[in-house]
Amino acid sequence: MKNEEIRTLSLEQLNARLKELKTELFNLRFSHTTRNLANPLAIRNVRREIARVQTSIREKSNGGNNDGK
Image (cartoon, rainbow, N blue to C red):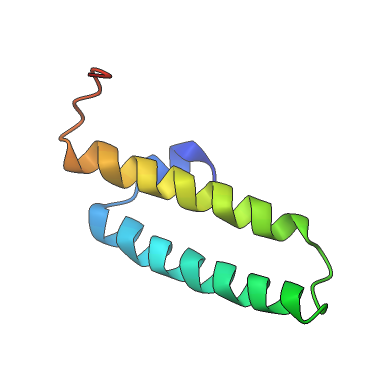
């Protein structure tokens, strides 16, 4: 998902997406450990998407107050 798509989601949808991504990351790590993972870069991509979703959740919970302070 792109940042624009993530920012349009509601807080409930973001939390559901975060749960899905964490499950996917767990499965990818398990596959990587058992040497069945075809694309190791998928782990990095999922971790980055988790960070994007968590950032968006944080922005929405702050009420859009992005002062940086």
